[in-house]
Image: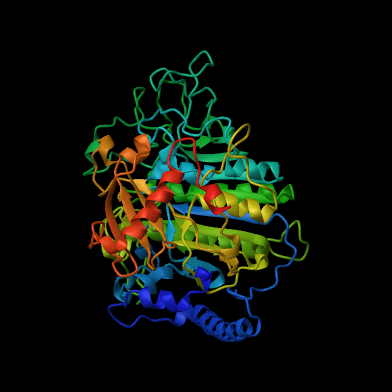
Length: 582
Ligand SMILES: [Ca+2]
């Protein structure tokens, strides 16, 4: 079976041609890797002829040095599209004068693998975060679409479910989350018991259900997006933000918050109703994540333990509140296009803040000794993943890439995301592309394969990872079959109406019985009832913008039948897709 990670020629065919010549000097590693790959193809083809019966070949990855328990960093941007990073400039086709330059992400791509068909499990925040941490599609939960709302909302992750960080805890990892949780918290009432809601929550009491109850040793972050998670105590309400303008900041009746949370403690609680102390400042969030990230990494190194850091960034979710500076890096007013011109865009400054946070982490990894490998630096044995929780929040091709719609939609612009992975000691060769389908649910199985431990069972005690497929071989460029379909969900279009009828799910497969990159849309009855009502069919290999619905074309009946069969096997709140791969 063809190794999709080796499908260079195929990718070259489907990439859109940029509007003008794109500078590729920054991609020298990628280009040389491609040349090398082509040479390998020739050699392998000869080998295949010589070795009759051999039907697949693999790239020859660099030797994998014995590297048990690598450190793992998952950096999750918020609402960042493919067009928001120059690491995908050639894929998106943005001209140099309209392409944000993200040097740290470029470096990550050049030192690692770039997936070109990666997907968030949902096109919004909460469900993607649930799926990333559990390896299970969120449409199997009660949250069939949209996100968790409100200052108080019941935790989405079940207490008896094994999570990715919980799995790693069992492997001896120190696990930390920084930034946005958005998976529900249970506050304590004044008597120490669970509060019924926000009104009877006592912020001076410990939080009773949060990240520490789902596999994390360390949490410094906030409940939801950075603006709803806390008022800016040092500034008046932002002009033009109607919703925020009606909030009486730092008042005893405050309904926005509760600002920074450390472990189970609300940092800024004053004991005077819901009044906070003003320590949560919107344009300083990046600085806090940077500072606390280093604290966490230092503590793991002191303990000589491998670490798992899930950095769920505040950026670039609106409103755009870039910080002035982080360490040596100017942020506000400093973002540049690839041609060197300033973007003069507050949004792009805010996107660039993610790049700076990555640069700071990389600086740390490159300069810090690995306490478990004397004489070596941490960066060598660290799997560093950068990705985003959904597509860009604005429907502009400059941000989303050449895709239909944006955040909130089941069209590609809602869920096709950047995904970069670097691990020098782990056999990931720099400058490679991979076109294999990937879902963020796959992090769980990938990490499990790295650890050499089986995934949790699908049923019974300590279950989990129902929709997770390992991408380790794909990351390394080894031969692997096409992934089973991915099932992204949310609304057909990125419309802000909460009708349950908008909860659509798509079946996306590159392994249908006819060549192509196929996508079948199912209406809301799939998520709610397990029914199969196909609505639209596209072949992205010749219609990436999803403009020609070919559902009623009889020549594609075999494709529809295949995708419906896959959906039939996947449907249901108690089912899984993992077994389809096995
Ligand atoms: Ca988001």
